[in-house]
Length: 264
Image (tube, rainbow, N blue to C red):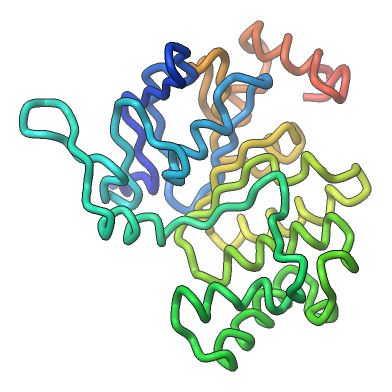
């Protein structure tokens, strides 16, 4: 018997004024697997991810996290109703997110950045919070840099601190919005390696990325968006295998790593 998806998206629409950036999105993210969202700039990938995190409110449609509705639930008349703030907070607590920018507090050390939310949100004692934070920094290979401030860390190290900060709150689902886009190629690998190890633990992950190799080798499910709609979805073999959708070939050939289509 197949388990229910960790994330269930049905009929999601997102508008900014008269502009519709997501059109009727239906998506299941399998539990314990990595779902990669691909597509050209402006296709709606990051907007969809932000809707899943409830950082953006959808204009229509429903989202469930672990079977619980997020933000809105079905209404009695076939529409939808907004849920109470306490319900929204409870469901969101299952989600961790890493952004393109690291968003670390510059006046706090790596240890402080990871432990602060445990103290202020989870009400851990300072000692308990720092012990948990050190364990997470160890997992991302930065225990020896715990006392360093963001300005003393490379971009890759800062992003790894951001990942540790999210993991310290023990989310069931991790969302990544192009986590390597602001890094130079030399530092990208260290962040992707942390994400690979995280995937190996069975963490449910949804990743917006342009790292085609990562998506093809780590992703269990590839979802390709174009103009706010899901154009193609399936396993890496189904999406990248030949013969493939002409729009995928076009995307791969015009992607920053020119000629990527010939490598898959």
